[in-house]
Amino acid sequence: MRLRLVPKETSFDFFKRWKMWLGISALLMVLSFTSFMIQGLNFGIDFRGGTTIRTESAQPVDVAAYRGAIDALELGDVTITEVFDPTFADDKHVVMIRIQAQDGEQAGTSTMIDDVLVALQAVSPDIAFESVESVGPKVSKELTQTAVLSVAAAIAAVLAYIWLRFEWQFALGAVAALVHDVILTIGVFSELQIKFDLAIIAALLTIVGYSLNDTVVVFDRVRENLRKYKKMSLAEVLNLSINGTLSRTVMTSVTTLLALVSLYVLGGDVIRGFVFAMIWGVIVGTYSSVFVASAILLYLGVKRDWSKPDKTAGNQFSNVDA
Image (tube, rainbow, N blue to C red):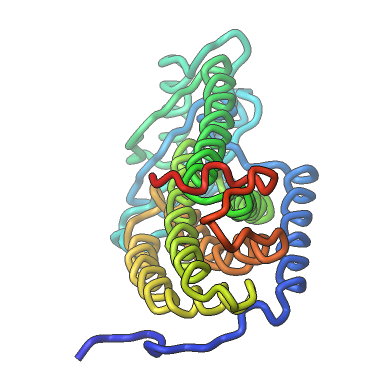
């Protein structure tokens, strides 16, 4: 007996209110962009420059006492966050301390780190530094530029790939879905002020790949059905194609989410931001492959008869298989 999360044969009308779904997506993108412009992102040490110290002690954490001890050192902007994790033992108390890059210093000096340790030991004698990460301002600026270029390059490569494999209408729909996913992911990180570091950039690139895979599966079925059912309207062909791949889409998304949720709960705080981005990306990526990519394809229309090339339709690459 095979497990099915949805029936083998479905006949949902995904495009009955396709304009409404596009409007909702556009509104969410505007809200995400607005949040980004107003609040910005809670950049991690990778992008801001400075030092991150992860401490561990057997004594309960007194954040106010920790802050008082470090403030006396006059190190500038300091963020102290207690880390809670169900996998921690009762006598394990972890704190993340982020200290801004010091003027004239490319990274946190050993003297500064020793001073912080001495100051904190006055509050909690058994405290120990599990890890210390330092990034200079110059390096952080380069990382920011590289991160932006990597995401832009990935989306541009997707545009070229889909354009060659299908037609320009398919390419625009796929890229619109990818941009939608990236903007919404950045928006939720801005709104919730979750730490945004290099791991999240890796998650964004993974989301681009996941969303593209789902979109290409749907588009392959659309192209097949456009040739098979020449008298069907485009909306009917799109509905038929999405219903035909729905079982696969839901099963893939649910099994992926099961693994990600397990990692989010049990994986610890170090990878939690990355896993959260992946969970969000799987959800919006599945949504966008239907309600953004396919809806834009419906809006743009597509040539139905590939046996008669029409260069004015932008389909000169339609016969190229990749």
